[in-house]
Image 1 (cartoon, rainbow, N blue to C red):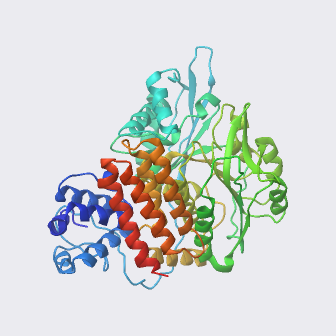
Image 2 (image 1 turned 90 degrees about the vertical axis):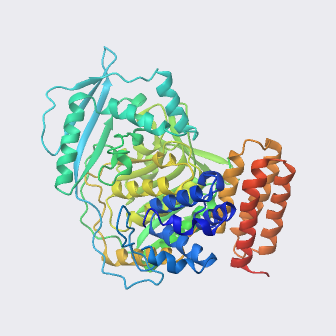
Image 3 (image 1 turned 60 degrees about the vertical axis):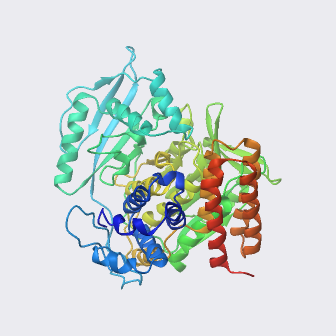
Length: 575
């Protein structure tokens, strides 16, 4: 997309119209879009879409010519037509991957994923002098460290601790993640370690290979830090966001690399635990998205869903030897032990600690455990955490959350993870792609580092890529391009997020507003949503917003709600 193409269409719209276009095409609110003039808003919207990729680029293109047909010829003359491929204009332009409004013939897919070499770092327990030893236990270039490098970690430094807390509490702003990531890079790669790492990384890039960073962190007080945010400066960015430098927590245990084909059928056990005495989660939407994405595999996948997941029901379901165990629910850490929260027969909480979970899963054919559970990777005693404990129980890989994760972000994590995992990517590259999707799609760009990958597979592969599955997922990807743009559910969730962030609406008014949004969301997620009910709930939301006498609500949020009402009428029709 040529960087100056926004000048072609900026003058054709008012600032309010651009706000509505941004919201309906990519779910970007007026506050997030920023800018006051037409040109500023248009430029910011184009840059946002350019970073996100071809799906959103096509959505914006079609929305613009849908509103102003004459712009189509002007865009083509300017070298921008994502329906037929990337822009071909000259000058400082950024070309986009080709897309098409009609799905082109699907090419025979090839095995995806870079070839990786391992760069192994280990932090040992604290010495008597209060410092920690850092070892480079393996690097592909065979460079010597001579002696362990000793490092002091500022666990008691207020600025460092505050930055960690900002991320953990989901309130990080501006440069917080980069500032913390730079500090963590300096801690993890001191002196000679830094020299060895960058020499190896540059060598791998010359060879067209990736460099997998495998962390073994023995001290529990250091293992609980969010190392996924290590930042290499403007030149290298966040290592965990770059597919060339995936970062994993490595558990050194015997592992036999599999050369088997993808199981047929692939068995997925989805366990959903939503006890009535715990905070509500978007479990219905999560289940719908898992079902939707796995459905493209047809009879190559066998999905079993266990709702009201009691320990006894899960134990029985595991006897069928699933390959993937996916848990949706809550996790907790108490009395030095990590736990998952299941349900009892009365729908209340019934916890199982990490030792009980190890017994439950040991000796099964489970290859990957996905824990969509808050606090499922965090705690104060390394051996007691849920995720690493399961790897110790001989599960090849466990993906868990180190902080509470917003529902909307968790849904995106799940879709991207399945997409890349089953397309033949190494596990760590699949997680990196999942993080990249969160960085580009989430309202807050710092949620991407919440998932942690614990792995004992040396090369990240559990099975060989399957050409048939790769083809199915490529077809699904092309279909997703055709259906680009946020759903009505996404838009209502976006409005809810914006209401939560609005500072000039008091808490009582927010409660009333969010009740109406929750009612609209439940209606949208029902099997046969009635547009009249949706309009009723959203008009009630508009009344509550106006009663709050908030300038932000009136000028920013009310137009968003009105736009959703119009779109619901178009998509669902009057009944």
